[in-house]
Image (cartoon, rainbow, N blue to C red; front, side):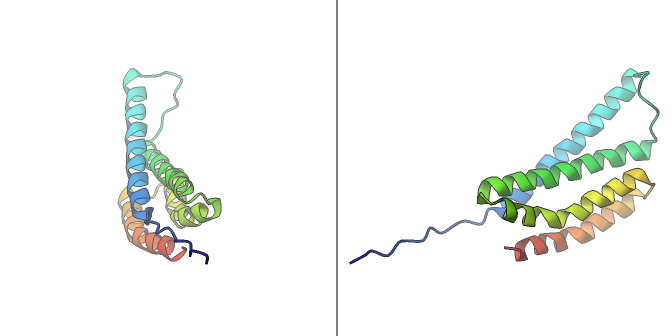
Length: 131
């Protein structure tokens, strides 16, 4: 008589991955701001002048790219499936596109923050449905 194989119950680690990726994104944003401030304070002569709004929005873009990349890598490590990790990270790509567009052309930061805050719950729900 064969014994039935027990299925391993997996714990959903996606909320933890999103929280950790958000922490990484915030750290990258902070690091980009510190690097810009240090370049500005030391008066690096080779650095071209950059508008203040562009420097801060570029920092936000770095943070959003770091968030999506770290979410992909954490999901890839947790699930061992590249396609599932890509499916979970893809709903967040419009935020990267929004911050990149806001870096290229002047979109007020308050509008970018509001749009990202409105879109984020929808992206999270898309990510959860894509299981």
